[in-house]
Image (tube, rainbow, N blue to C red; front, side, top):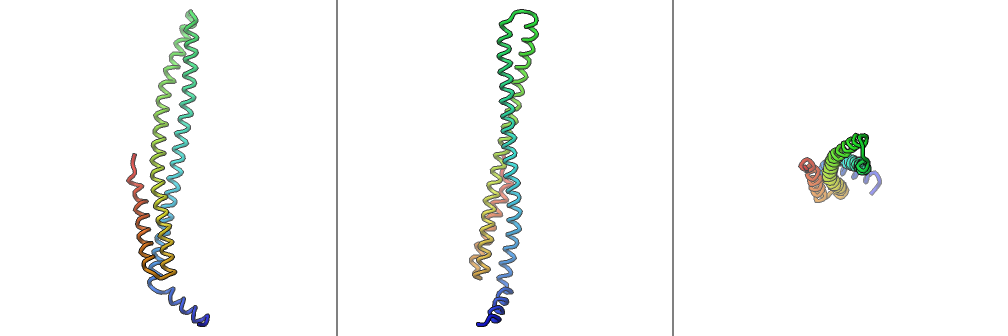
Length: 176
């Protein structure tokens, strides 16, 4: 077979209906993959941000706990000193101690909320990444279908894309 004849044959095959359908399917899958991948990256970033916020809140809680402890020590020391001046100082440190306890509870609650949000974002990100895997496999199978002209690979590609899309869409079902 001459080069011209082979080129002619390849040109004819490239214009067949199956290759166009498989190619169009692959383009659609690639677009879906792009959307799922970007949303997965955004969700992963959200997870990390919430983890960092929770960590910051726990560090803030530790700082307040240290201040509360210092107020307790100061109050214990003042309680050993008699006099009117000690009475005013005692009240000041008792108020600080109470304030630090209240603030600590609020900070703990906020840290827990950030932790829950981070966990939720992590669950969503995992589903999106799993969906991304199936969509990537779908592109591979669609490519194989074009190369081999076998409808089985095309069907597997469509099935994989459908599964990937379904797994990705379940991200909207994940709740606290």
